[in-house]
Length: 315
Figure 1: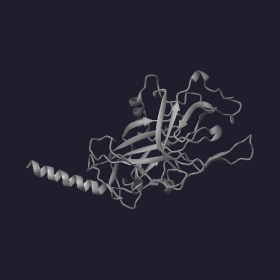
Figure 2: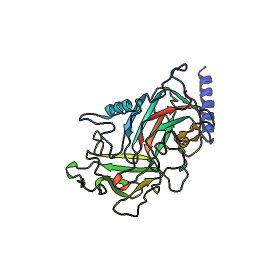
Figure 3: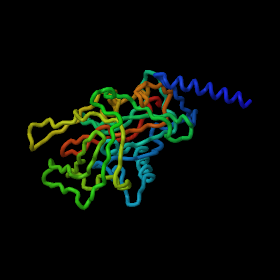
Figure 4: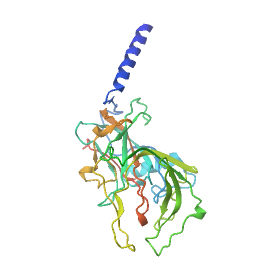
């Protein structure tokens, strides 16, 4: 009997090794409540880890003593009501869960991540999905990126890494309130793995700390970085700069308005870490991460905002 189990295990391992070389992978989720009814909204936030930004510590609000767990609870409270949370600059992210599996109907759109994008101003978030393959209810299995329109662009940087350093708030720049277009870039220092460094801007509209106060003296993020070439000043008047952040074609959150067809996401677009297409019958977790390291002048950093998720399979 023992030898029979060993033989079965060897056969299973050989099949798994063979499948790993295939372009497509299979992953099958399990509904915790197959009969429903289900809520068409975020029901869990496992992680809320924003990068520095002008809405950090306010969306949601941080209070002295609040830690990661408390901030995740605040984020869940907001998202469950479709209120906004900010992910800050590049790399900031949120990991969300649901009371059911979001099914993949091949060829059809599966879900929408709600944002606050509007005409000519996008703040794209890179979306990843995961399946509760080990059935423990936690997002600790493999993640698959939704390969949006820029995934294979020569301007997209995979595994981009950035570190932000906590500033001395007593030396934070003071912005002239009489000059809305002024800005001071010497606020929150950052360095990346491409040999570049710089500062995140502080603007006149937000005077709280932009650094997440429940984090340590530095925070590092890794993810897919999208080009910032779409963020530009279109005004010829230096006294009245007019910034736009043009949307990408498809496949991102906070990229176009929520009712735009290009806001819809197909699980079919998921790829593994090597860029190979994967076949998922459904997903249990969604991660959204700010995809650009960009400044829009006096408007501040480009930061992805999230208001919730809608499962397009549910009526």
